[in-house]
Image 1: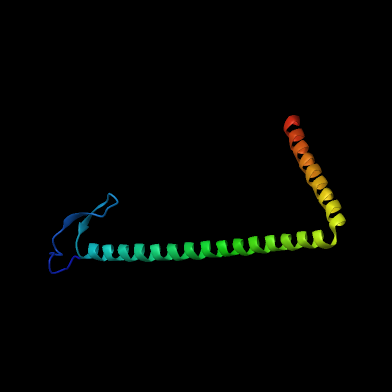
Image 2: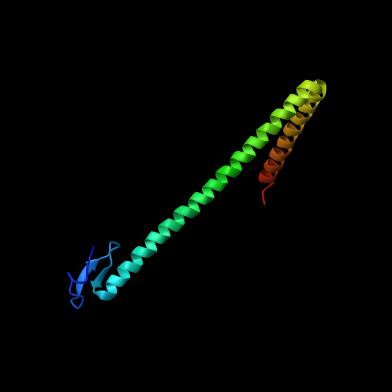
Length: 118
């Protein structure tokens, strides 16, 4: 740690900040170093807290949605298999038909647009 007793603050020396800038070393430069250190300390702390909170909430939201989604699917499948076996089979065929036809229509529409040009 630099102390003012050890250094003559009237003497102007050249000091490397670390980013390539050579600045004069004096009492104002000590204040600059102090402010720069505080800025980076608080900036690092702020960024760390913000990123932690952001990722924590994103992970929590995805976990809750993931669990809710699969619990709902599980109960729907169990309910359909136990009580509406035939209805589930027809509904499953209908969903497969919808997925295939929607995929084909989207693909053909895009291909047609690409082939026709602007």
